[in-house]
Image (cartoon, helix red, strand yellow):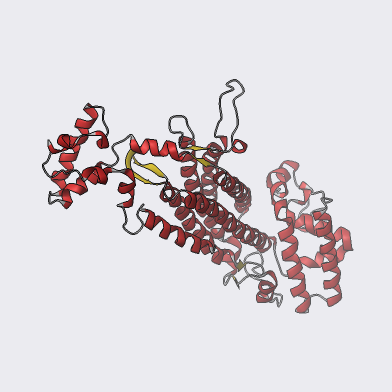
Length: 458
């Protein structure tokens, strides 16, 4: 039999079965991690006397030669060899002969693939964290430039209260900060070594798992061999954290799409992040935030797919787990691509301060401050709320905004109104009055920015 595992079989594998069960089409992405894990494994085998020092050196040299060819793009993978592990082992045997078969001593593809994925996800989780910080940095830059820029704040997509644009966009900084912390926390579960668990029960060879963990930079090893080969929680955690983060990115993208429309015209995205229409020459389409919004769905799908794969599996390893990789790869690539795109798009975005200010001037979002004004003069809040509701209704009927009403018009609703009401209603004062911790007042925004920079250590 041509298969490395073929000794027990009397027939060649059906070609359709080969195509169905082979994973080399996608798990070749783990080639570097597979070689990295094998180099650590063979070093341990040699140190433990399980293989001779000479054999260890020859296998190590062979693996390094295979890696050199990998990096040069010279390896041609075979579906007949099923997966990345068997392909690498075949390449090794081609390099150094039958001696290459000793590499698999004391391990199984079950603990080997788990190790590869831990190595892969550990690396990419750290890269994801760094990319999140690049987006946070872009947000901080825009916020610093627009502490005094006012924008209507919305609830129910209706104008609610004016806020600092810096305050608004910094909300996304804190969403991303929570995302970053979730990824950081997940590293604790990623940073465990499965290698040495064997197929599911360990091995009879006197291996040293802690030594392999040390060589590969893992903080610890799985204490249970069956859990080691069947655990995919670490992938689920990445997919889950990625799903929450993509939801946040989608919310920001939605705002960018809305803000860049002519109806709002609050921001203009740089031309390099937009596209045109094949038929309407005047169009400037915010395709990038639209696609970021859409890509959230594929990340959700990858999470649900793996949850569904795992939900009914008995211990320990099952072939179903082969379906864990494509969604993981796709999510990592989607997340990193999205973050790479988002940072420069925010950095180059033009904030139309005048348009934002005009919008603040032309609404009733300062109505709450009139209620607070009356409360400070002794009127119960519920009564004040009712009075201001009638004032707003009156102003709408007169096609006026609150700052355009005369004092006698205010006094027709309550004698508590005085000339100072117009200072209270000025948008700058409305924003500045929200000076509670975490509020939109400039003093609080400056304090918030300082905290944000501390989180980024800038």
